[in-house]
Image (cartoon, rainbow, N blue to C red; front, side, top):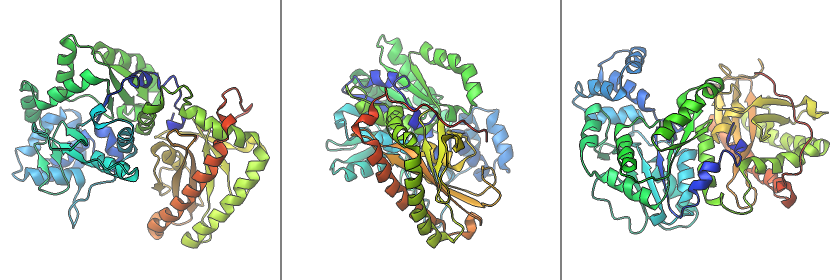
Length: 490
């Protein structure tokens, strides 16, 4: 499943949280990993190798796999006098002009979207990440919507003066992309032990205050942090029964669909035992969409993302011949723009989400499919070998050379761009993908120009498909399409 498949059943726990006028969100590493930053284990591997404690990455990974990562981090720290530089470079990499921060991910922007619906007093934002990507997403979202509110990071007991704006509580400290942005990062076993052993920390006090106001949603976190577990346990053990929802991703657990099915009851039970409601998603993009839906879930006319996808899929699939011709012709025009940038062999394909776990190769400029049975359907998932599926999952432009991807022998590189569609006043959902391919490797193309042209085409198709989906009757779930294309194995 992807964000386009979200239905009311999956969003039920989030709907309960939406009843409150105040809400808190805690983002873990899963928010920043898609931006290219390391997860917890990978960060410790980098620390070990960069410090020289372990010479080879494979050996470091094997070591971390059999150790508590917090304890493994101690090995790097005690052997390196330049701890600040080591941590910063391990987190962000090295660059000649300093290491620039990555761009915020969809989950960061999802959290930022809540700031447009809740007052600063009604939205508490927490993160266990060292980076400032959440602040970046907040600045961008507020600015684009002409909301002149300050945004400040907080990583110490004395909060900064946000002047009625939003505070981002960094529970484990700050590590910026320059040496001077550094605030007590909690990284090693000693760091966690000291923090967890302190009474009445500002972190625990802030979380308790937030939970008194409304529900807490954990997103992109594995919940292995001993301090946060201790704080929540003390709050619940104190007789206070807050609503805590853990949005878990199969992507983060690194499980196959079959493995997830086998352990799903165990996952639910373990969270229930500590007073937390677990909601399982397939990937972080799906969690991000669920967060964006929060302010709308209690509207009487609410339509889930899957229903909104139906509002696009139903009329297009129903008027098969009409849209095959129209979309093939529109793609032909777009292909010419790509060929001007990439060469005469560049192609262009439109894929559509069907709202039922699939991504359908709908149209190409060089053909019109004669029947619905001619359409290819592939599974939409973050671990799909299809580049189009990855673009749908992550809501981002994805580029790949043929190794490890599904393509024909003719194509040497593929780039795919998501197409978001907005139905009514609800948040946009990635419902389509434009994929393009050329017969040379990526390093023989101009990737920036490729992305630029493909992004322009994506914007055009976003408007085109949104117009189709926004016919009022299309949200009527009683209307349906009789047949859907068969799924093909990849």
